[in-house]
Length: 270
Image (cartoon, rainbow, N blue to C red; front, side, top):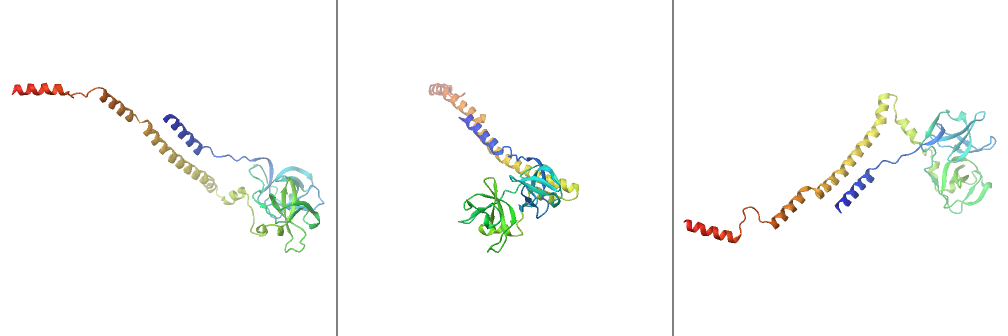
């Protein structure tokens, strides 16, 4: 029973400390969107742009030689064209979480999705209650609303549009809204000094290791104490000594008959 209890304690310790989950990078070559106002176009050169790709995020390079000045790229499952002159052309490989997928658009009741950012392209797909992944902004028909901004959304592996006034996500219209990729945050926090870069890179790791070490120590110490109390040899020795005392009289202990004759001898000696 005790051995089973000890094994369970050790299993809990291993599960609690464990190995941290690993985040795997997406394979392929990626183009960094390092400027504002970079549009993703449909897979033809004559159609209007689909939407603006959030700055600091990435597009996956599909064909860098499609046409003069245009690359075929993919962003969050949407394939299209990008003007290479709109960006610096900086590429990288194996990017972790290259696309912005942290926001979904919530449509108002009696709202539909549109094939294009105009009201004549209304579909029969009701937008209310759907999980619409936000892709980016674009300009379109204003109609009676105070803005001409539409949201490009992804639903059922297709790109649709919905006017911003038809959603509960008006905060996306604010200029301060700027989703930032974690890679950009790391680069911004770095300094030109190589020594400071090294300390900046090591600081999070060192802090994490210290917290992890304290956590491990805090969990191991109570378990060691419990195991010591359960299996300490002193308890078994005490039980054996008590059993021996019950089975035979201690050395020097005399029975009542021995005490009687001893007293008789002492009397006659006097």
